[in-house]
Length: 182
Image 1 (spheres, helix red, strand yellow):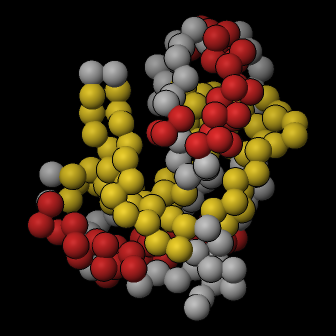
Image 2 (cartoon, rainbow, N blue to C red; image 1 turned 180 degrees about the horizontal axis):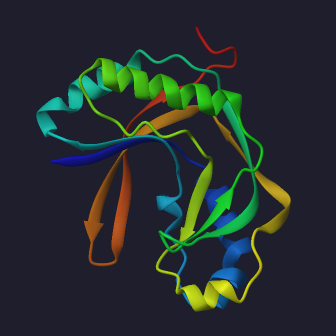
């Protein structure tokens, strides 16, 4: 089975700069940063998909028409339950929200059962954070200036386990449009 999700990604350069700005915080938390290639904002988590169903999911995604997305990641937060450090966009994006819903609807209409979560723009920067390390810091921590991610496409990504943690890779991507359609 493939473990799949749709996401927005920062450019590798922007991702590297964001991780660099978080480096002192990551060090204070006693953990390691995520690989830059793993940075993404999940739009729609589809979950386990049989390889023979991959083409149906691609076909569903190819029907989605949405506006390009701009997200400003302007704060660092520690999330207790998953034990992660994230960069968050505190201002909602109507375009990203609409794209998330459109992908959930397209996947559902094609017979998949995606998570029906409301989109919350975040990039996971580090995992496996010990609570005592995180609790000695105040949250959220403002990023000034914020990091603006302009997304001209969305991607179908796969999550695979490795001995060093999860590895995320792009399977396919589709364009977003300046006006929300062709």
